[in-house]
Image (cartoon, rainbow, N blue to C red; front, side):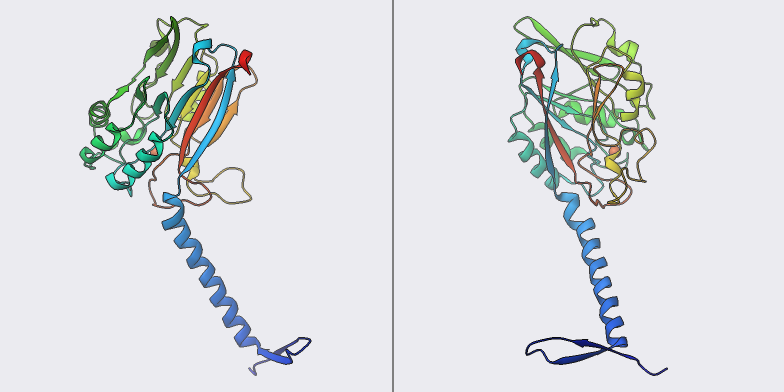
Length: 300
Ligand SMILES: [Fe+2]
C-alpha cells in the first residue's frame, strides 16, 4: 500500500513541511511508549517513597479542656520486609519526630508476613518520641504465616503498648482521655464490649482498629474518634474514579480520609499507610503520616 502523506503548513519563515503518515504513527507510538515508561517509573520509584504529612484539626465538645490541642501522630501499615527496610523506615521516623507529637498511634500491619526478619525495625521504631506514649494494634498481616506474638514482641521492644481489646487512660491534671485498641478483624476477635469495659460513656475515647469498615459497628458505641488503616487507599487510584477498585475487604466502605456519621458525633480517620503490599507501587495515593490536633469546640 502506498504511503499516504499529510501536510502541515506553517506561517512565517517555517516554510512547508511534509510528515508521512508512517512517520506520524511512529512518533505517536514512541510518545505513548515514553509516557507509559515515565508513568511506570513514577508509580514504582517516585510515589512509594514520597510521603505526605496530612494535618487536620478535629473538634469535640466532649474533649477535656486540658487535652485541647493534643497532637496525635497516626501511622499505619508499615509492611516491614516488603520494600520497607530499616533505612527507609529511619527516614520516616526522622520526619515523624520533627512533628513533636504528644501521642503516637500505630494501627497495624507492622510486618508484611511472618517470614520477615523484623529485628532491624525495632531500634528504629524505638526512636519515636511522644510524651504521652506510643500505642498500637495489630493488622491482618501481623497474623500472616505467623502468630501475633512476633509483631507484639517487636512493638513492645520498640516501646509501644499493644492494645488487644483493651484500653489505657491518659491522665492530665485530674482529667482523663481513653485510648482503646481492638484485635484485628481477620486474625483476632475484635470485642468492643471487652475493650471499653470500665470506661464511662461520657469519657472522650479514641478507638484504634485496623479495619476502617468496623466503624459501622463502632459508631453505635460511645466512641469519639476511630483511627484505622488497612486499605492503603487502594495503592493505585484512577483519576476519574471516586474510590480505588483495589480496596481490600473491610477497607471498601471507608478507604481513606475523614468520615463523619449522621447518627452521632463519631468520626473515622483512615490513613493510607506507609508501606505497600502485593505490588510495590502507588499511584495518586501517596504514603501518609497523619497529624491530628484535637480541639475542644468550646475553645475554637
Ligand atoms: Fe496493610
